Image (tube, rainbow, N blue to C red):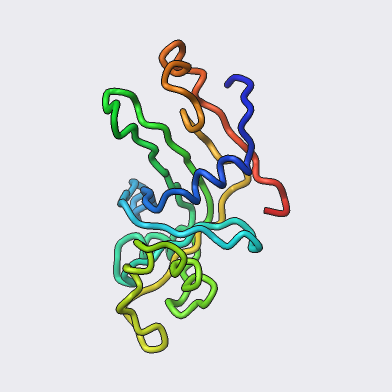
Length: 170
């Protein structure tokens, strides 16, 4: 990995711009289970975490209950130049299942239109179908291509890979 100018603050801001990611959990036999899902990010004054809303009976929830280790990838596709490889941020961490009436997560989901639409019809006090998943990231976050120009990546695709470390207070 090469020297770069990107830090956790930069990556956190890039993560906040998006709402779609791909979570990988582990099945009972150790094989991966992957699914796309919308996500929210903890408020600025909270420790950095990702939040997902899902059905309580989904396979990812059962997998997390058995083994809380997850990987979450946020793709950064090039919408105009589709032949250019997508950038990505990979967050590994520990997932926790939380009740759907967790107020700080509801607040987080209320801040973006697409997430607001996702929770619009949920009766948070009485719902038994949904849960929130909180992903507490490992300190090291892996990135590829995020923040790099296409020309820079074209000259040497290996320059696009780097990692950032979350400060303890994040």
